[in-house]
Every structure is written in structure tokens, then in C-alpha cells.
Image (cartoon, rainbow, N blue to C red; front, side):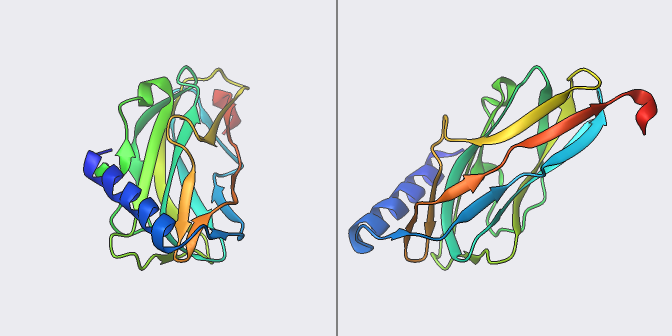
Length: 172
């Protein structure tokens, strides 16, 4: 994640802090991972990371966490959001199971998330043993979960855990 993106996001935080007062949005915003997906050991899975909530999102940051002995980060894919590129991600610690993410609308217009939108897709290689489950979750470490709508900070961001069920070779 580049320093310019972090600096602009913190400016956004300061802007809402100074000019938006202490307004916190009461709307429930959900960061969504698929409840369950499956694949064989040594195969690849694509896990979409999406969001839905009754507001216009201006910026958000969080971490995706997994056990690196069970899942290996391979790359990133598709997005429904403008301006998401390699600078939106911190990938230095993916070998430890951490992917940090930061997105903001540089024009401060925001993106309507009243219908589900995909931030990005994570491609992972499965190393977990057959007939087991590996999981991914949204975490506030090392990057805290913070989000802003057009009228202030979002104070109710929830998420779920994604489970990757590892199949026996003959199960498909």
C-alpha cells in the first residue's frame, strides 16, 4: 500500500473529523465473504470480498486474515469499485496470512452500496489437508477496520468468516 494512499485516507479522516463534526453513521454495513467454498488440496479458489449497506461509501480500510499453512496468497482479481489498483493493497505480509486493503473515492462522491458490490477477489492455493476446513476473516490487525460514508464515520461494520472445505480427490 503506498504512502500517498494512506496519507489521502488520513486526510479524509481529518476532513470528516473537522467538518463532519463527530457524526457517526448508525447504518449497518457488512463486509461479505462467501460462507463456504470448496476445492481439492493444491487447487486454487477465488474468494470475493464484497460489501453491502444502505449508504454511499467514500472510503474504507481493513485486513483479510487467514492461516498461511492452510492457504497461500496468489493474487487479486475483479472489482466493482473505481480506482482500485495495486496501490490499494498491502501485500508484504501475505506470506504471514495478512492482506491489508484501503480504498477511498478521490472525488469524495462515493459509491452506492445499497446493492452488493465486490471490492476484490483473492486467489488462494489450498494447502490444508483433505476433509478439513481453512478459513478467512476480516480483521482489524494490522490495519484497523475504518469506514466513511458521505456524511461521516461508519460505526457499525460487521463481517463473516469464509470457510474453504477441502475435498477428497474423488469427491468432485
